[in-house]
Length: 116
Image (tube, rainbow, N blue to C red):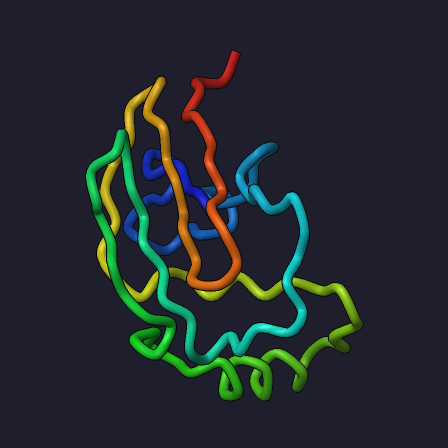
């Protein structure tokens, strides 16, 4: 997922920072057979590797996240859980090409654009 850091005042307003049109790119399909607890992912920005880590490195493991979430809401087939990132993040400028490569799944490629 994406965020606008200028909307995340004092690192506490995550909803506003992460809730905008186009901020949850997915596709072209959702993989249902992969083990989410053991996926290697690489993030490249303009071809430079910015992140190269496993979902094993998340702050909370996937079963713990699911247990917590289902205390409050019912998860249905097809629901997505946004876990955050296992590594550090960086700012991206308009025009930047961001590629997320997940082992055994494929590459999601998006270009950063400014709001109109």
